[in-house]
Length: 464
Image 1 (cartoon, rainbow, N blue to C red):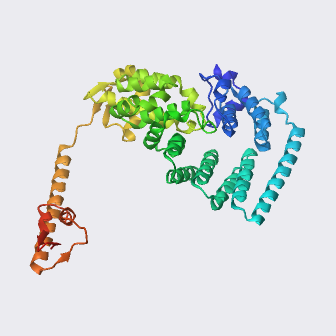
Image 2: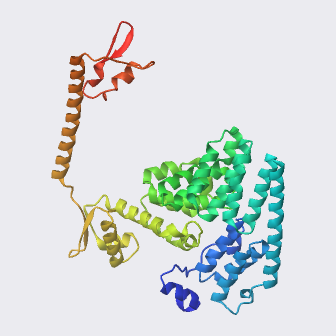
Image 3: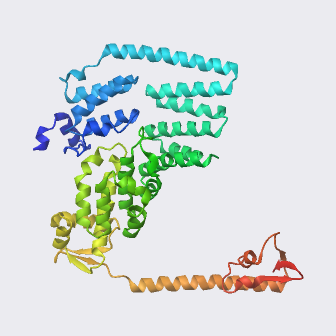
């Protein structure tokens, strides 16, 4: 029924295998966008407008209005063209050529003025003026949507920075630009540069949540969910709205909670998430994430998965989370199935389907996928409709243990033989200055008594 109400544009996207979100999200679009500032407002509106078949009209109109409030003609054109593809008869789908021509001339004039000023500063050889000129030019390029030029202008400030504060501000601007470019290597690099600066303790505390949130985004984009969870969990609750040109405190709660659910076991979730006094302030903004984690820690997997499914539409419309929703949800669900199966040697497929609120056929396909990917060590008895645990290969385990013991023994014997040969040859190796007995005893690995090659005599530390 929902697909019949969708415009032909979204039906065509679905036929090509593209992502189309048919269900309405739980958030109110106006209130949701109101939490953000800067270029991310347009990016999020445009993503929703090109993905959601229920909010596309409101989102694209908002994107057009957002673009016209700024100086980015390219983004305005993209928004209008996208709206024209979906609903050609909409008045906003007709481009405002007068505004576009006027803004293009203004941008050209402003660019020439700023470049001329910067040229004058360079002729005067005043470092601070050159730094500020590059900063003004980079900010202007950012406003008009020319991100590569903005990045280059900010990067040129480096040679004219005279204080750690200047370097800090430059790197932070580069972080914001790199996030918009999805240049995650640059994000990580500039975050590390800020961390290596010698700053006052109060400045370090102030910038800490911004750095942790940025690093978490870079790790999330790279698929390193455990590292991303750690970064978001370390983010100080003083973040507030100081970084809302990139993400908000609500985003930190969602990103951190989902990454933790996907990558941590129950003990780690209890200790690092639920008992984390700083992250608890973020979880209060998104209580459903806290409930889902609590249910998982309490082995109530079906309730945990129900909460995540209820908010899946919201996450599919998130700028940074959309690409990872499938993998995150798979990891959480597979972990739940593995934890559920641990106490059993065998369990019926019907019982598992009931436990995870699905049908027998779906759970069977899911279990087959998990077994093929090596996530679940089990076998499916299709005749009796059972999932049975794979018995451990005792013979293989004994052989592996014996081989390990033999290799360890061989290494120990070789070290002892080497010690004997050194002593028999009368070789003497003087210890470096400050080299104590502990360091010398570890020279031969300290295995099997090899550590007693250290010998002291005549007040001089020596080892043979």
